[in-house]
Amino acid sequence: MIGMTEEQRPNNILKLTPRVGDLEQTIHGLAEKSENVSWSIHALERMVERDITDLQILRVLRTGMIESEIEAGKNPGEWKCKMVAEIRGRREVGVVTICNNGQRLYVKTVEWEDMR
Image (cartoon, rainbow, N blue to C red):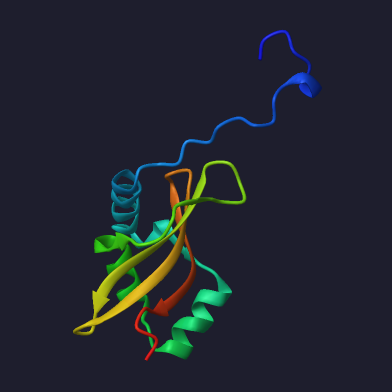
């Protein structure tokens, strides 16, 4: 606040979580260009282990729906959620994703939702 020292400013500044529809739209748009998506080592390992391809994950990011709470990421401007879409008939894939300042997507992990 104006006129306050850093120590006097309140630490409980409200972070406004984006609306589900708005974040879905941002993720869908960013995923249209695969160069906007990066992958964690953990996600790459789970993809191999679970036989989930990068094309399937991109499809989830481009068409899926958020099926988790939206959480603030570790850094300012980051939002974490799980995108889910149907793949391979009736199986659903979950992609835990971090949207970084509405500029890039980071795939943290991937999983089959039905846990076969």
